[in-house]
Structure formats: structure tokens, C-alpha cells
Length: 252
Length: 359
Image (cartoon, rainbow over all chains, first blue to last red; front, side, top):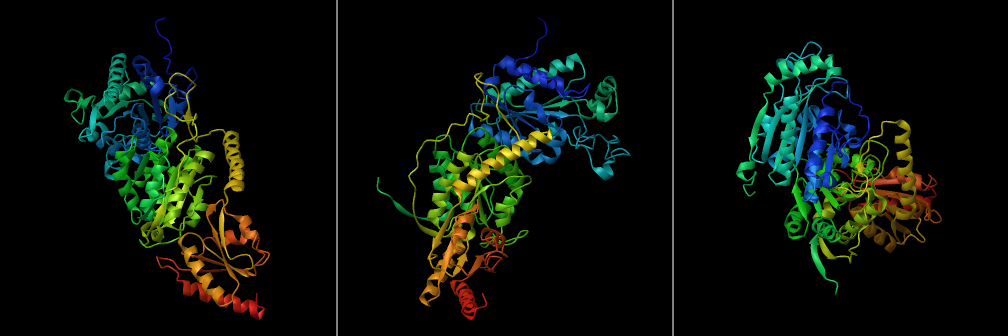
């Protein structure tokens, strides 16, 4: 068999819309759990947002957190059980708006967790409102004339921001708009989990993702938008890597 | 081993007892007048195997760290004071919705808003009626001494585990700050199994999900009904009160926590003057000890509720006695502590009304 369902991905239909990137990323995270053989000792924390029911899709133990609080919940699990693998899976509203404090402080503490961050520049679950990552000019339900930074402020660039913090071991921004980028995304997610196994500190992988439904696009148009609009504003690449320096505390 | 009496602050006694009760994770944020709990935990936890102390970036983060630790099956606690507990209410609701055990300490100060830093009992509504959004209850324990602070920490952890509920110790700045001798309770090291915990399934069982989301209305309703059926058991098994000289009492003075100490002094003074006064102190505020109030109806002509609030408990007293007797209220707020003399004056005024046949 060339392609089979990862063991860490439940054999159920997801509720994700056609063309949404969540399915791809769920698969990548599950493949990484399989390849590292960590499913049995992993606890995943899902957010409020489109990934809220991911507890039904990942087959590791799962906790559903309050909006934005996943890194604090992950901190509780990880501090109580340092031998377990703990990851959060969060969207942009969750991680970069209501949960900014939890994101920043879990990073600066060097919490040894892995954060999977879906940036699709919009609130999906609530029907397409402005996100902290919504691009200037982007039309959403709450920016009907396009996001005007003079009025609604500028988008938040999380990898750039978090990479300035000493507790951040690894920050990389990837996309899943092409087979090559999907492969690179998996490599980054793999590294994010390996870092945790090696005790490196806080790892975050930001994944530029599509939301065709709320963007009012077809899936292929949405992929074009990731390429033509999002990647230029949110450049892909590694923003921080402390893995060859012994992690954030320099002792690994 | 001989029981050792030590002189400690209420906040520190509570922290030490919590550790002895198996608390292995403490997450908190500084706020007066409870900060001694965090300071004590920061000293002790690193010396204990598996002990975790973490100063969170916010009250919100602290309660969510408790949520995570509790979800993984560990005894976890946070503490704060009134404004900080308001911030925790979201997390408390999630914890209740997920049926997780944990302990939350509220060393109350005056409110609303930033209020003051002096003792108060104005979070009764928040603790017993509105701990967060949704249909749920907290177990609420009201200590009245430093010894209670220690004993109730153990009681709270054990009850929280037994009923899979968050438990709150509703203390106040007076109890938190004062020093009294305390003997730490003997604690059995056995803790219940937590097969529901999300701590990795080790490929040995289906995955556990800790969750309070039910998108189907009938599933959410069923979950709430099931929880409230459990609450009925809790009401039967947990409701607790302390009575003092109530056997023949015509005037029942009621109040919880630190206020009950003042009431006791006032009742003693009233008895010296031949007034048949007694004290009823609710020890658990949820469940409210309704039967203990009903038991006083045979002699009681009037009730006097004394609190450091504007009278948040009055309606619960009225409901407990089914409004069969008048319920008066006397209290101070803002950090002012009622004096025994003030309470005595209230008792004497009520006694005079009884003598005149006005009650």
C-alpha cells in the first residue's frame, strides 16, 4: 500500500470544509506521531475554533481548552507529567488574539511543548470575521470595506514576534499550498516534536492555511491566494532555531 | 507520632495541608491578601518529588494550568482573592463542565471592582451561585480558623476527587493573615484511581477526551442532568453545619467563616444576660446545610444573619427555613469587621421585640 491512514488519525469523517488545510495538517501531525511512535504518551490540546473537535480526529489522549488557553493547559499537563509529549493545535484567533498572553508567556518560559499554529487570516468557526492575522485590505464579515490598518490595526506576525523570546527554541513558518511545501511542513512539524523529545524548549510551527468557505473562493483559488497574498506578507522560513545550541537553556 | 502544634498563618497552614493532602501542582498569581499561599508553595514544592510551583502570567492562565494538571489526573490547586477569582470563572466553568477535581482558594477581600484589601465575605454569590457560566456548582467550604484552613484543604481535595467536582475554600483576609496554633491532620496516602485522565493511553485503551463541548442539545442536556443527579448525592452527603447553644435558642444568629467567631462571642455575652441566643454556622456553603436550619425551627422565633457583605446569604437562610420565621440581617462591608458588641446589640434588640410580642 502506498498511502494508508496514519494510526494516530481516527477513521472518521471530519467536519472540515472542502479545500480547508486542516485535513492536511491533521494528517501531517498524525504521521509524525506515528513515525516517532509517541501516540501512546501524547496529550493533545485543541482550541476553540474550527479545530475544536480535533479530539475526535487525533487518537492520542485529548483535552479541549477554553478559547486561547491551550498553551496554559499544555503547561499544566507538561509540568505535571514531564515525560509525556504535549502539543497544542490552535488557530489564529485563538493563538494570536484572545490567547496572546498564553502564547507569549509559554514561549518565554521555554515550556517544552509543541505548538501547531494554523494561520488562515480569518475566524472560520464563527463565520468569517477579522482575525489578528487578516491582511490589510482583506474583506471579512467585520471588515466589509477591507481591513484598514488605520482603523483596525495591523496583522500580527507571530513567528517574528515569538522568535525574539529567549524561551523559544524553534519557530518556523510553512505553508501547505503545494506538494513541496507540504513535505517541508511535515519536516518542520517533525522537528517541533523532536525538539520536545530532546527537551529543547518551546517550538512553534506556523502553517499558512486556506479557508475557501470564508474567503468566498474555490479551493484552487484559495491556494493561489496563499501563494500570491499570504506568503509575501508572511514569509516562509525558520525564524528561530536553538537546537544546535543545546536548546533554550543550553544544556541539551 | 505525637501531634505537633505549630503556630502558623492561615494561608501558610492551608498551603502546607494541601501539600500533605497530595497536591502536587500549584499555579497562582500574586494578589493580596492570599500571596502567602504562593510564597509558601514556591518554597516547598521544589523540595517534593513531582512538586510543581509555577507563577502564571495571569489568573486566567493559572486556572487553565490547573485545568491541564487536573485533566492529567494530578491533584492541583490555585489560590487568589476576589478580583482574581472573577478572572478564573471561565476556567472554573470548564473544569466543572469536564467533571474535573481541583481546589480553588478564595481569600476574600472587599469589592466590587478593585475594592480593598481588607477582609470581606462579598463573594458568597460568586462562590455559591455564579462560579462561572452554565449550569454547575462548586463544593464550597467555609473555614473559621487556622485549623480549619488546614483541615478543609484535605477535605476539599478528597471531596473534589470523590465527586469529580471543583472545590472552593472560601476564606477571607482575616483567616488568611492571622496566626493560630494548628495540628496537621493525618492523611491517608491513598488517592482514587483516575481512569478518565488524559495522560497518554500507552496504546492500552481507547483515547480519553476531556471536554465540555456538546453540539447536540440533547447530549448537553443529558450531561447536565447527569451532573445534577450527582449534585443531589453531594447535597445529602456533604451538607455540614456547626451549632452552638441552639437547643433552646429563640434567637438563632447565623454566619459563616470568620464572622462565626464574632457571633459566638456575642452569643456568649447574650447568654450571660439571660437571652436565649444560639449560633448556627454553615460549614459548607454549597451544599447549603438546609436541614440544620430546619432543625432549629422548633425553638427559634427569629434569625439574625451576620456577614461581612450586604447580606448575600440571607435568601439562603430564608429558603432553608421556608420563610417560617423572620430573618434579620446585620453586616459590614468594605473590610470593616463587625464587633461582638455590635452583634450583641442586634441580639438584644431582637430579644426586646420578642418580649414585647413584636416577633
